[in-house]
Image (cartoon, rainbow, N blue to C red):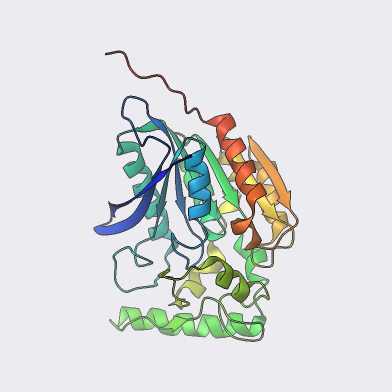
Length: 304
């Protein structure tokens, strides 16, 4: 099927978030609105890193898809760069949802959320607060900092905390951010040093991506406090949790527990690592099937 992709932007807290708007064959028609899947990436990544394949699959199934970069990352505006703030990223998701609902040709009552890794936690948080969301997909999701941070070597936790304090104090004094690597090989220092981390990013980051292997160190002070999976019981819309059983980045069992706790949760498990799911065709087919069960692409045009 022939789909289209358009560069668009939307506002969030005074900045401009860059996004791709994918449309199904024939484009978007205000007289025959279709569902829209709102999508963003995980820790430090951008809209170009492994997400276009999913967005294209959704568009081929008859949905629109809005894939955006958070403020201060990728092609979006915002200074200083590479400052990861959970609260701001959640604000950007809310702004993206509002933009999707205001887009001609999108069914305002059929907005779905899609999140992967760190953003898998974001869509759980948003779904628990916005009951208008029609469905949620999260894959290899970050659902609880306690088991996730436990995968970080203790020496890196100590160093990361010290560098995080240095960065935070510097920001209060007006200094530029102090950065640490997002990924490094085992034995190195970064937020992620598991064996899957470096080859995983190498596999999903294409030539021309604006991904940078660095984040402001202050995230190491707030990262342990993020536990979005605790909101699972409040998520009343259909929820698909796609778990990678050989995931070294986000532990699979806490994610599986989220599917069990959510009133309408569904669980699918794959014999794969954290980054394999971006390239896998079966997860795409499974997610399209899930969304097709819970979203309608056949809304009749209003009578003239």
